[in-house]
Image (cartoon, rainbow, N blue to C red):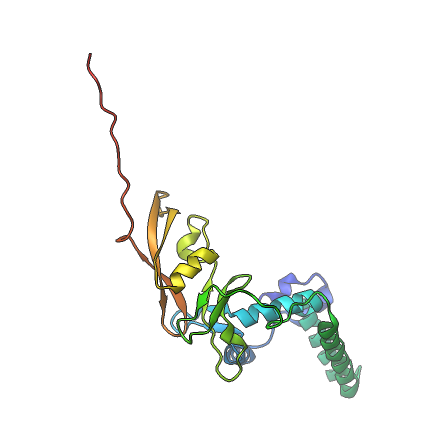
Length: 237
């Protein structure tokens, strides 16, 4: 967020967030807390790793399809420019508020009337298994397999198995729907073609581990059958 200004080509707008980026240290922490509370992101308390939930991904897809400019730091810079103009007396606060309200109103209308948006909950997707936390269905999303409970405002559930996983990345592998089904049943999956730091190929078994906040893969070699080696026998005449 601090380096967001580097992504802006307009020199005047880039100057608006120079040195501060998007928001301040205090507001960023508040934003992260709110996003986690509303189940848009998941925060690992130990590693401080932030990952989007299924509903967070759905929201990103909707905004990127309808109001893509909201995902650009250029818009934040233009808002900062407007606030600076109010501060200098170049425009009135009421005029700037009207501009912002008009933008929000038009953006909301664009999202509501868009024919390209697939709103969460309107499309029936076949479940691949049951959530180990709450027992509800788990469905496939763009980046992972998540519990449908993320839609429930009273009893939300952020359980997700991400398709991309660091343990599988060495072999350019990812979690498929078939793998996720097995993991949700409590079964192990065997993945071959992985690479060690030395570049040597290996296979490993993985099981699902969930601590109630984050779901991860646990690696084991106990269930992997060792390769049999054959030596060519020399025949003497």
